[in-house]
Structure formats: structure tokens, C-alpha cells
Length: 68
Ligand code: SF4
Ligand code: SF4
Image (cartoon, rainbow, N blue to C red; front, side):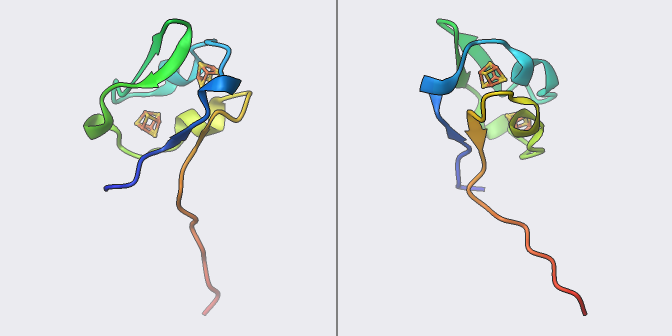
């Protein structure tokens, strides 16, 4: 996967919730702001996006389902 999660660090308050749900160790709090430090470890589970109360993390893809 070549795309990166979008991280709007200016909205991050350093609460650490995303780090606590990331099972891949891809996220760290650095200087009280989220940092994606191990991108190659990210499994794109999107849990960090779901748990963040400030909408800091988003993923540049959209899942579209079609009815057959
Ligand atoms: S998408 Fe999943 S694996 Fe990747 S940084 Fe977020 S919580 Fe961690
Ligand atoms: S959950 Fe959101 S606000 Fe909290 S540290 Fe992670 S990115 Fe920042």
C-alpha cells in the first residue's frame, strides 16, 4: 500500500487513544502530538481513525459496496 493515512497534527491533543488501539505499533506520541513512525507496520485497520475524538486521522480511500 503506497498511500499514507492523512494526519492533521494541528488538531491532535496528544490523548494517546489512537496509540492504545494500534496493534501494529505504527503510532507514537512525539512532543505531545501523534506521529506515524512505522508506516510499514500499519495494517490499515482504521481503528485509529475510528477512536480519535478530534478527527485527526483519515484514510484516503473509500469503500464502496454495490448491490447485485
Ligand atoms: S490503521 Fe491500524 S495499524 Fe495503522 S496506524 Fe491506525 S491503528 Fe495502527
Ligand atoms: S486519538 Fe486523535 S487526538 Fe488523540 S493522540 Fe491520537 S490523533 Fe491525537
